[in-house]
Length: 176
Image (cartoon, rainbow, N blue to C red; front, top):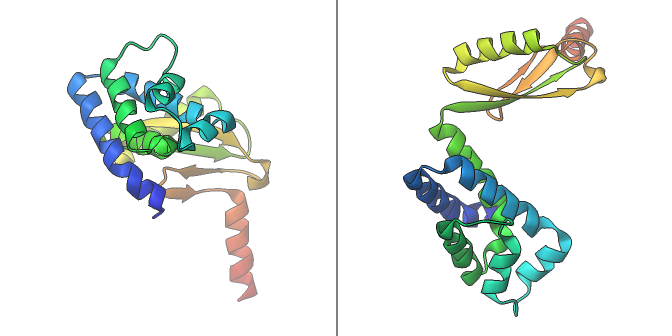
């Protein structure tokens, strides 16, 4: 596990607790996502890691336009005071994982050889919902190199039903 993730974990948990107590998980997810993207912009990143940068200025730099959540502002201020704003991308990723677990949602990426239509995606979502006992959010991708079939990746489980893999297995079996 990387040191950045280790350092980011307590901040992500704290942010999650604050957001959950306030009943604002989706809003905080968007706020942290915005701040993480802003912190990753090269010019902003240079300011975030600069030892002479003022914490108040950095917080203003990373707040979304029109933000009025004082608790989130305070959270960014704590990160700035502790020189941890550079961890925002990791914090955002961990926060989203905690949110998905709390909301009992599995995020899956379906990579298929050809684009899937809405009916196929709904059948797939229904099957995955039964398998995992959770709601499923699907992201799609197309990789013609799969030849046919699909690969489903949930981060923890990979289901490879691609024709490319089946042909590779058949080739290996014939070679033995």
